[in-house]
Length: 148
Image (tube, rainbow, N blue to C red; front, side, top):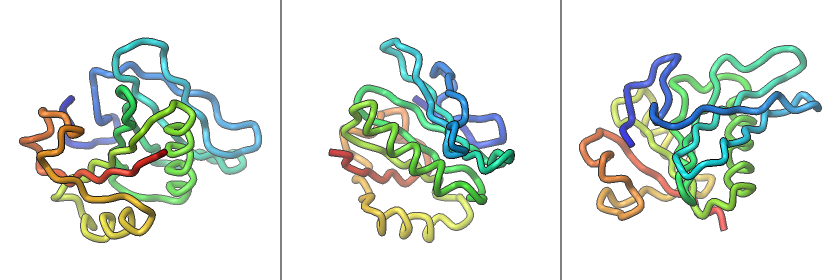
């Protein structure tokens, strides 16, 4: 799995299958439903407030018992709710871990790392066996949250 430079149409794994569910009936976050297969599954979460959808969705890839997340370039209104929906989906999918992947050259990198540490994510050793080998050449910080 390779993390491409993020653009409006990029995701953290281009080879993953894409599915997402409809917005919640209560106007809350959309719930993504992965395609039933053994391949990595791409999930996208957007928040819906009234009739407005958040401009920047959160993309994630579910592979095995790990949900890989790369935060959007800008954290706009509704980002917190979309992120909470991702964590809830990780629990519903019986994930053991959520791995946050943050580009080191991202504006606000250090503040973002501090924020995720505050809510329970830990910075991972780059040699961790949980980090895919294809990430080893990427300029990224990986953080891990134990769901269980």
